[in-house]
Structure formats: structure tokens, C-alpha cells
Amino acid sequence: MAEEKQVLTVNVVTPDGLVYSHHATLIVAKAVDGDVGIMANHEPIIAPLKISELRLKRIDNPHHEDAIAINGGFLEFSNNTVTIVADSAERARDIDLRRAEYAKQKAEETLQKTTEEQSDDNAKEKARIALLRAINRINVSNHK
Image (cartoon, rainbow, N blue to C red; front, side, top):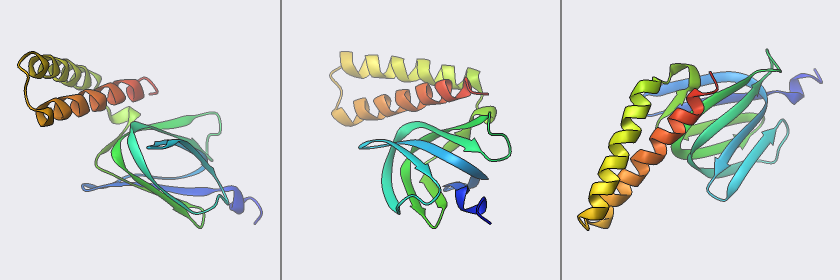
């Protein structure tokens, strides 16, 4: 019974459905205001997330860390349950590295083009976000 109190239930949900559901001892996420580490019995929290890597220490393999590419959203924690609602999310093992590298290249080209052409700020911001997402996916894929 005491061991159950040291366990978090972690669910990552996107508009497409459940991406990840496991038990963990620790999660680390990048919130807009900085890194957030959560263990069992943490105070309830809601935090907006950056485009970043979510890391989890699973209870079934304490020497292994799961990594998930999170593309914005928010984290909510209460009653030892972490729920992450993300715009999109991909586990490291599911990331197609070639596709991510291609997306990075295209985003860099688009960003360069919008800078040279003095395009509107909206186009630049979309290209910048696409680049951040691609880089995040590449970084997370290295945790396979």
C-alpha cells in the first residue's frame, strides 16, 4: 500500500486520442515558466507547456526513461495523476527521423525565405514554430 503512494499515473492525450498511458515515479516537463518535475504526492498544478521533451521514469523499468515529443499544450496534476493535453505528441520510438529532418530543412528554408522577403510576422512565426517542432522531434528520437 505504501508503494502505491509513490506511483504516478501518466496520460498524454492529443486531439487524435491517447498517445501514452503508464505508471511512473517521476516526470519532467518544460512549462512556459521553466522545468517542472513531479513525483507522487506533489501539490496539484496546472501549467502550460512549451514545445519540448517530456521525460518519464517508468516503474516497470527504473533504469529506462521514456521520452515524448510534446508540441504545446498543458499539464494538470492532482491525486497522483498527470494528464498532459497536447496539440500533438510522439513517443521517441514512433518518430520517423528522416521525416523530422526533412521537416527541419523545409522549416529552415521557409524561415530564411520569409526573412529575406520581409514577409509578415505571422508567416515567420509559423516557420519558427515548425522549426522548433522538427528540432524537438529530432532530439527526442535520440532517446529510442
